[in-house]
Length: 85
Image 1: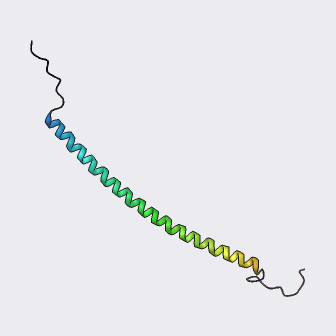
Image 2: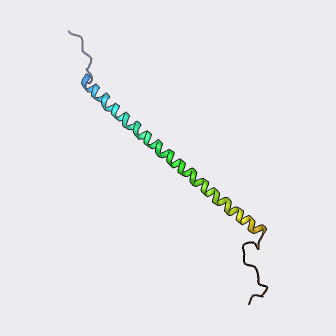
Image 3: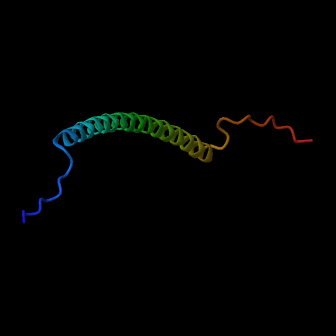
């Protein structure tokens, strides 16, 4: 009785085709990863600029508010001395 042959897997040609397909998929994923990294960098830069602008505005408002508390008549119309009717 001859020895039983182990079951054969995919052919060499099928394996080479699968490897080629997987290499193309890896290349596409690497490109997508690169594109996402560029978009993340751009979004981060934009967020940093926006944060700096908002912080500047908040500082300016805080300074103006503090100044108005320390000098309540500055920037407001002065009284004419006439009583309100």
